[in-house]
Image (cartoon, rainbow, N blue to C red; front, side):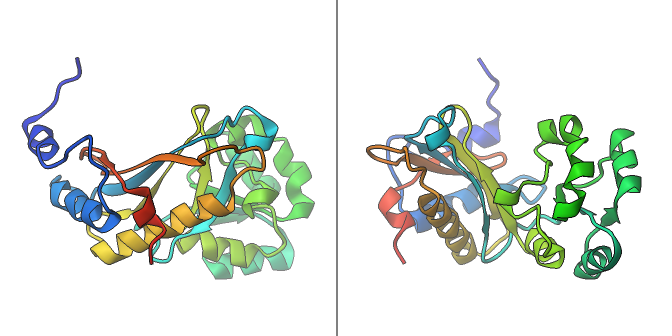
Length: 232
């Protein structure tokens, strides 16, 4: 049995595991229980009625949260010439082509998001075995293979979140920090759920969203009332 500290035991007493809480109330409880010495990440987890192993039930995409995530992403861009200059001007942390590929092959991957112009995907494709397992491989569906590198960099820096359904049909993501005002966390949560709804796979049948919960890094999970996630 996993050890449960006094702080988490106390937090658990503030939550009824059988009750689905309205979003605004759940956010308040999450913030109340985020008492660690660091600024805890607030995470949303959604249990969807899909089987991602089936092609018509796969779910992957991005959403730009209205208030960002509170996390500063380091962005690497594969680009040359004017596109490289555009990426640098937009705030990219690392920009390059063959030189960047050599660094990655050598194990230097000090970045959280990788973007590439279409003409350099032949080069980037050779790095699939390195970037793929870390979820860093540029992908047109995620907007990370694009000629509009400046726009992609600004989106990544501005709070864009990638999401992908795991084998059990679970999607989760950080939607802010515990220090965020409650209203901002609620708006980010609703924006994330709206993106999941818009991305509903064609093969999804029956009730799409089965369960949703909210938690902070060190706090207990709180079951959410699904209807409150779509209310304005």
